[in-house]
Length: 253
Length: 242
Image (tube, rainbow over all chains, first blue to last red; front, side, top):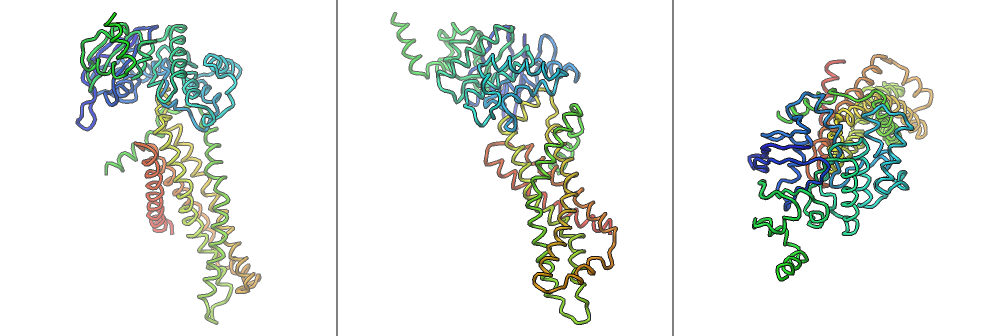
């Protein structure tokens, strides 16, 4: 379980996050949604330790990330898996080396143990045949899957995904969503996804938080989202014509 | 002032929490190949031609009958050892290696590869930059020794092939009034310049913000700042060591 309490962040006097608090449950997919520039990625970076919040705390199973000693922070970091927006694969390494990288750096596994684990993770994301290819030789969707394989190679307790569907076609997006859902359920991971893809919200989002100009305007389960009375959230959800039509159809029924 | 302070804090971070020694050894070898071995060709070409040109131009200026012809070779040797091989080679390397380091790290920064390292709990500056700095400090003196040798050899080729100096005079000239301490001075310079080029370029690349345009700017800034720092350090070293 991850708990964030009163997270505030400002850059050059401009407030980006205004006292965000929430709890993200274990074994569930928690979505943070909102338009561009609403502070979603900054919140995620505050949670994973890339940006220190000006105020507030982030608790990983009651361990305060920012008020812990180095060892505890390091231990929490080793329990995290992060899928970055562009995959963030190391260009100079093959797919296999990218996935093996955390094992090489952070474990004392033998070569055969590492190989077994890497093969398992690549197989899990359906890329067992792409191990020897370079990141520049694979598609955007494959890069995301390699990113997921690298994120889960250390058996994380917490999985963070920053816009896993950005730049992907709808079919690949659905596949990535399904993969994240399967992994979350299989390993009982606390998953947090930053997205503005409403399809992901409806398909895999269990708990959803809506951010608007640095404020948390709504939080709840995905089935309640279309019934919201928050105008900013309504505007965000029904920006998509298909959803707008579907909502009208439901009203008529 | 704040930039200089940030640069020194960055230097301090290189020696923060490190990784396994085997990781650094592998990275050091990779960087030595990338920084040193891949620069052999350009250094060889530049130094050979600079040696050749300095021989021809020195001979062109030394027309007095009271100055022996072998003085041309002596001047070529001392110019190569004291200034041209270490300084010009390192300025060439600032262009090649410095821009490469800055653009590599800048791209890693904007594509979140550095963030990925940080999230894993890896000291990204130490892991990425320290091997580059050590590799530059290790390979630059070797490249400069090679450059000095090829420069003097280039002078020999140009001098003898054009007939401005005989082989005998040239060989006599390069051994005449030789000061072995100059070789030490020649090797200290690239050691210092290597450190400056690698750290300044890494600093520029490491703190890149934005997109492809900013990576280009970081790369240009890395080369400019490295060249200026080389010239300043060159003067200070000459004052201190000669």
